[in-house]
Length: 502
Image (cartoon, rainbow, N blue to C red; front, side, top):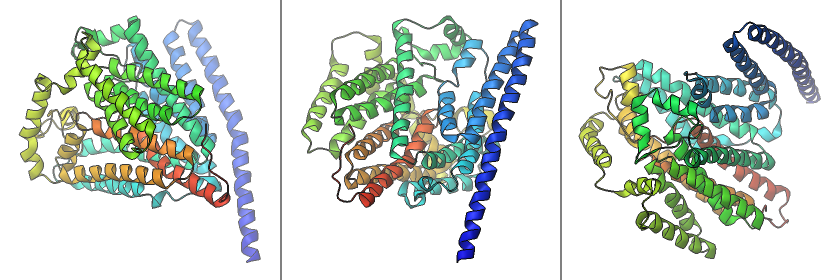
């Protein structure tokens, strides 16, 4: 036994030496590459080739981010999130399409390698992720996604295209669990997402209150069809610096639910008021996006919170305020383009709503006849791109649930719905089981936030866009982490009274 212990210690020592050497070699190599690129950039700038200089500047940034992903994964984790938020902004500035979203996927691969390199031997990174019900259903859905490749109706090109991003989200799910392994790191994670979402919402409000920058208008007018879709009710729908109005609306709406519940459960007044202000800006950003489906996000998230905490007096007041707010939006005698757009969500006479209803009824026989669907990427724009002759090619799903039913069949739809139910069950179950009030606040806020996103899947594809999907899959893993934090505290300090984090 002593020999085995000695061998393990020597093996760990060798690994630590290798990591130390790698870190020492990595920094000089990084600085050498940066110096070389800087000299080359200066040369091209002096000779009038400024576009090459910008390209080299981007290369410098890429090298820096990749380095952090491998050698400093926690730092690289947040750099990836920042890049994901601003992935569409540079192409609007230069009016050219850039594959930055693909770059985000590549960065996640480097981060995955760096995470396992740097966290080996870290006791905090270990846990029981596989014992989570959410994880089990995530794995089941991944296995079914693989089985879809053998679907007789499948389009190989569409499956490969979709599988790349799906794999990245699953990797991010695992990475988040391994990196966000302490209570302090989780607090920073949540604050970071709230701050980034607030900045995005504030920029969307700027577009509404002040107007678009010239380069944004030029980018929109280059695509008349896209401009026509965004110009509704006499105003242009706002998209902030994200890739579109749907992504912006879903991000602002879901984070408005999160921050509202955190504000309601906060005890310290200054922090409560700050969270309330952030929630208000997020709500305004959501409304300015003109995404009608997001109108239901706040009522849905608050409704789940009310049902979960019905005995609380503050909850009853929240319910009253929410009902009054909905009534104001729906019936206030105010002629405002933003309010009119939100009211049209529930207008049964709306033409686009009726067209979507007719499309669903028309395609139902196909869904019943194909339990595994038409194949991944068979419907909508993806179908036109990868297999124009497919029966579903070009059919507008206009709904995340309908797209699941078309591409993966009613079997795939059922598995995804079961996963959503498991997310709600596990979040609510953990909320009632936890003793630490801080972790309980986070758990119920995240669960209600995720529920608001799930509700929107009925009318749009709201799970899958960057950066929203990164948050979605990250918190799926971190719900389990919060429970582990609570259990660990009960084990270490079983007699210490629980204190709320304020």
